[in-house]
Length: 117
Image (cartoon, rainbow, N blue to C red; front, side, top):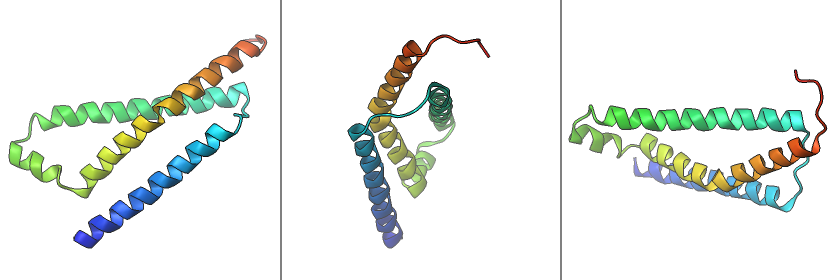
């Protein structure tokens, strides 16, 4: 069990480092995307964020139906740790999402209006 936890943490750190590297690469280069693809990407990101938020809300509601011992047992699992790690990673991406939204707004402002689809 200890080996599994260490392996998972090592893998999580590796995944996090890959994620940080990807953000750094994004910061060091200009975003090159057209408006339709930017809108599609934003739509996908928004739906994923809403799903994650809904899951968090559901966990809170469900936790009220569980007794303290069950909650302690659940929060001691690897699944719970992965959930918390995903919340932390999502918080670190907030700046990137805001940057992407600003870039999308800039693209919309620069794009001449065409026929609505």
